[in-house]
Length: 215
Image 1 (spheres, rainbow, N blue to C red):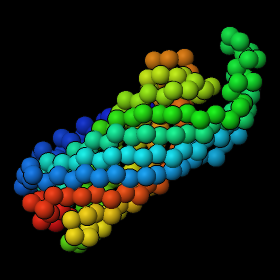
Image 2 (image 1 turned 30 degrees about the vertical axis):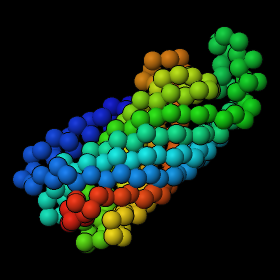
Image 3 (image 1 turned 90 degrees about the vertical axis):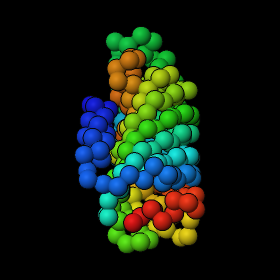
């Protein structure tokens, strides 16, 4: 499952950050926000498009001359527009399947509230620019039931590649990413959603730690 893969990735990356012969930077913090949007990978069964807003809280736990490792906390609100196209995805053996087919084939909005927790590994290209990979997992609440995901508790997994550019104490960020949502089999509907997204953000670093950014 995607959830297990991301969890394993984060564990290995976090362990690596503490085995590196590196200088600690406990005061290196960043915070900011981003907006993003995306859609499902093309398929015949359903449509799904989303737009979202995130807050970012980051703390560098290790750094070397070129590499640094950040712990990341990202509260997020995600609004998705979903419609079932293939009504036969709801099988006759399901209870009230005719009513479900009629309900799920209507366009609907799904509101999601997420807390992403992850690890970011950064490579500095210059004093002002860097690239990075970010993996995160987090609990999620979705307020609308669909044929692919039950209403209630679920998980959001994100794998992203990104580019940063520093302007003074601010960092401009662009982040293509892949996102998967599911509930790990805790509820009946668990096909989940897979989306490709693009995200734009801005981060701020307090003046006392600006020298350690993107070294």
